[in-house]
Each structure stands twice: as structure tokens, then as C-alpha cells.
Image (cartoon, rainbow, N blue to C red; front, side, top):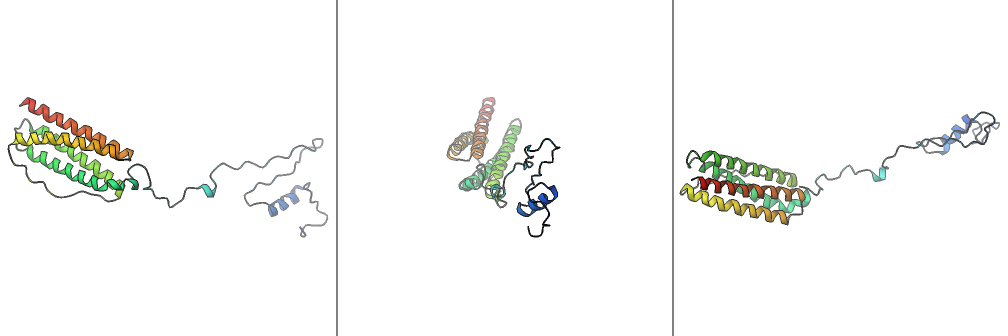
Length: 209
């Protein structure tokens, strides 16, 4: 304050002097309180309050920049315990896809479209499981081993497929009950319903023979 002229008032009545004083003692982001300059006869009126600062999170409450995006309850790192199981299920779905593809060339022509459609749906299952596996682990798993061409009478093979579809549906239901990941549980329940419907498709096919 020694830099101010001796004749300058320091009680806030001079707006220019007050502004300089405020700038020296306040935070850079604060808004100065301008002394009331109301017309004569209104002395003593309450000075205007500083403008309210926009609401928002302070730096202490800001989201950390390095937060791991994988730390989520759905298809994240917490579900890594299911990766090996998912890989096995992907491989099984691909084997079933190739089984139906191969068998579609051995059955009567009227039945071939049904088996081709089942093969396409099993492939879709493998892709959905593969997407879940990638989201959890960050690694794309897609085995490239070929399934042996099924041998035996095609009706006997379809009977085996009927039983396998029911077993797979039950296995997916059990997996849905075991996981704590709601997204993975929903996927397993969806696939269980699909596999049960596949068994129904095969049952209808046998009824038409």
C-alpha cells in the first residue's frame, strides 16, 4: 500500500483505488465487489454481490485421465475368469457350424436348407462369443482347426445333433447362472434359447421324414 498516493482514499469509496486494492489481495479468478455507486439519497444500500461462478467439479473431483476403461461391470477385466470358457465355447460353436455345413451336403435336398440355416446360426453364436471374449481380454480368439467330416448314417448324425443341442442349451443356462457379469449372463441366456430352438427345428425335421 505504500505505492498509493497519500491523498488517495483507501476505504473503498473511490472505485478505481478499490479495484487496484482488490486485484492485489484477491485470487485471480475472484470477482471484485464494486462499491455501491447509487445516486444520492440511496447511501447505505447493500453493495452488489459478486457474480456466481458456474457450477462444476473442482479439480479435486475431476475424473482421472488415466482411468482404465476396462474396469467396468459388463464384459470388462472383472470377467477375465470366463475367458478360457469362452474360448472353448467359440471352438464348439465353430465345430457345430462345420458339422451342419458338411451334413447339409449328405441329406436329401429338401432338408439341406434347414441344416444350412442352422450352420449360419451357429456361426453367429461363435461371432457373438468372440466379441465378448475380445471385449474382456483384448485378444481376438478364432481357432482355425477343421472338424472331421462326420461319418455314419445322416439320420443317426442328426439324432446325435438333437441331443447335443439340448445339452448345449443346458450348459449355457448353467454358465448364465455362474457369471456375475450381467451382459455375459444375458448373452448366455440368449444362446441357450437359440440352442433349445435348434433342437425343436431338428424335432420338426424328423416329424417330416
